[in-house]
Amino acid sequence: MKKVKSVAFNLYDPYESRLYDHAKQHKVFSAYVKRLIQRDMEEKKLSNRPVQSTKRTETKGIRLDLR
Image (cartoon, rainbow, N blue to C red; front, side, top):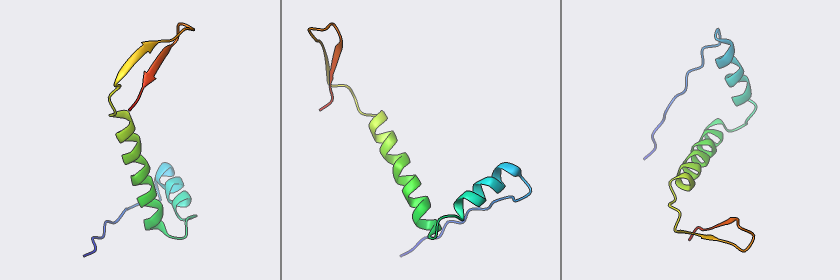
């Protein structure tokens, strides 16, 4: 099953017009949007990752163990 989501661009709005111009540079718009969604999901996954432990190193910096 496929779901279709549409995106509307108001070409009278300078900001949205620039977004539209940028988006149409990509041959397959849906693939471009899906990559943007994937990147957003990956960034959120990394930002929600808990820090397991912290240790002081010999140089007095902090070492983060992200397991």
